[in-house]
Length: 267
Image 1 (spheres, rainbow, N blue to C red):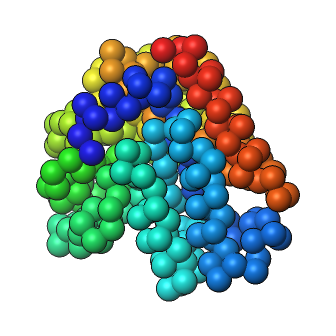
Image 2 (cartoon, rainbow, N blue to C red):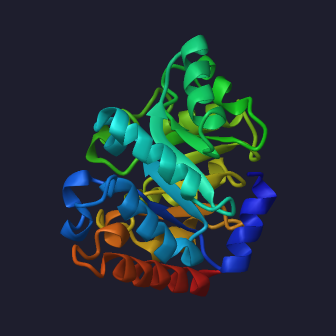
């Protein structure tokens, strides 16, 4: 998916919501346990209920890879079920050198119909570039994450006062373009968004951490939106696990609609 198509979808839907399919098999409602593939059955129902209110889905691959071949099959069926109109993200956080990175890129961006993959950039340019070689595909590089451990590395100061994450964003921006490169920025780091926009005014940010992690959609929108909106705000648990009953899909749809309505007010 190219940038202009994504921007058009955001403008048309008045939503920059990304629904995170972090489908923990242990949390699937009992009403689906009889299904041949409960994970896919759950995801399918969630997608059907939320597709009108979001522009993207993010599949956290750990929840699928942990289930072995069956989990990988569920993931493959899920990404193929997501409508072509929606931006599909493999949240795999891959990061390895040259030929290995190339194989990861082939796996997720060629053999599976993902539009983007998250990448850990700390092994340098040759660990990121292989993901940027596919037309209309994206690398989403970890910039400033929402977890407490970000203070261990990302927020450390280098000589001269620049912090590690600032150096990473400035450096990585030169490896691709605003047409194939995004950055992950946690919603709980809203105090850094204005600074990040000075460093990277035109890139899209994938923003996890709204909802269960306590990030503020209002703050993210006010401080990080650019002329193209430039945001995909991910919400996972607060939507997909909003109910554990037979109404799980209906409640998820209502929750996604609420987020989309709030986003429309900020556009």
